[in-house]
Image 1 (tube, rainbow, N blue to C red):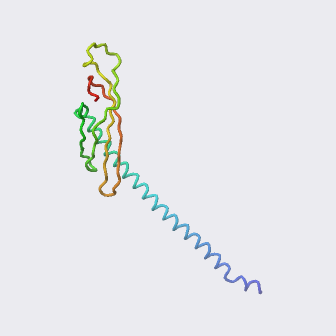
Image 2: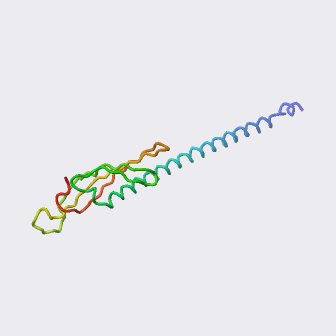
Length: 144
């Protein structure tokens, strides 16, 4: 009879202990999900910025006016804002293979250009900078 009286409340304490552990587990799960949602949201925002900058680079590449002896910086409008595009830089120039023209000024060259574009998100302050290389076959003398 004495051992029964000593054990009164032991079940209650054990149940409360397990309830406390389960509550802590639930709270940590909710916190972890919130953090994961923020991470995914930030990654999505970064990918949207990257896509906007890539779109601006494609706009520059579609117009050959940027690729000449005096390239200039420019801007391009996208859905996310205005993208600043540095003047394209000619990195390398090689005479195109397979041509037998004798005059040096009309032999085509394969010019490698680097285009750098950046966009800053006005809401989050995130910056996306993309360096894009492109090889363009042009007439000789277009790569300074």
